[in-house]
Image 1 (tube, rainbow, N blue to C red):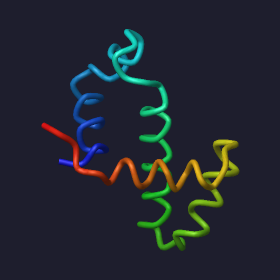
Image 2 (cartoon, rainbow, N blue to C red; image 1 turned 180 degrees about the horizontal axis):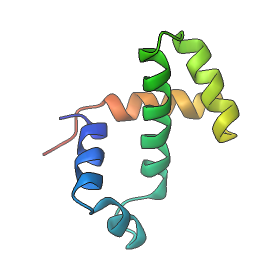
Image 3 (cartoon, helix red, strand yellow; image 1 turned 180 degrees about the vertical axis):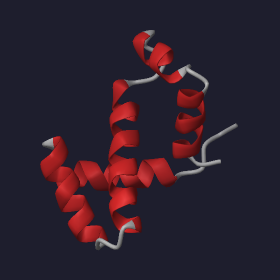
Length: 80
């Protein structure tokens, strides 16, 4: 299971927000989840990966390196 899948499952079950508020999960993971979903949806709609990353950079007000870091982390296999 990928990190993104784990986060989405926790969100579906209603745990993600509570774990984040409690300091168990860093808010950075929530940002990375949102970045991943944004870029992934753009790519699935036919946009190039480069353009999708540029759009995320502008939309979220962050650096491209942060977007690439988020994409890489979310695709990693999580420990279960």
